[in-house]
Image (cartoon, rainbow, N blue to C red; front, side, top):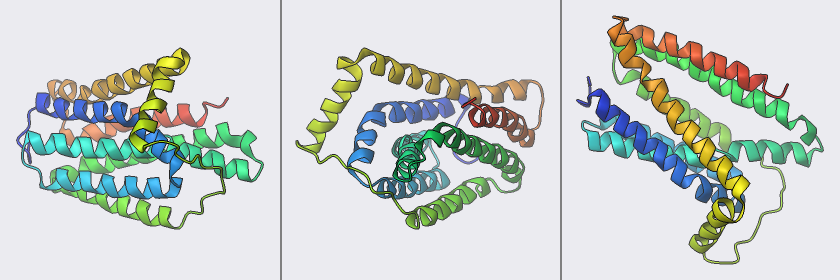
Length: 238
């Protein structure tokens, strides 16, 4: 509204394009993560994410918003599953894979806790300077890129592509979505839950506006939800 001239419907169109990108690319990017080094996939994801936020920073229309959201969706697809797989591979290489569920829950929980803190900070920074939360997001992604560069990837067996990459991706998608109904249902259920949760999360904002709550407090209210999500992830293994 303030920088790009979007109304709330336009905003949700951008969010829908983000969610659709993540859902469509989930299987192909999973294939890339299995074939490439996980470290390289995470480096690419951080770089692509920075590009997406850069588009948000300079954008001034719905087209820019959609492009930015789709680019960020590509980055999230690359990260999704790759971070989990790298954690499991690391534990497996040290014979500690039995602790995976607890550590994966802790990893996910820490992510939600950090989003909760960022929501509070962003809510108060935005009125002062609208671009500041986006600029800080780009800086945090730059830090993530540097951290990933220093990570040591454990030794693992990598599958060598036997066909053209596109044909291999299609075959992988067919395996997950057609030949094995239980895997396909899990993917569809997770995708639907992801998209609906994201839309419901953002629909809180018009409700807060109707109640007359100031915008700088939106982040504080949403942080409560992120914190509860972090706790449920952190303790999920129990």
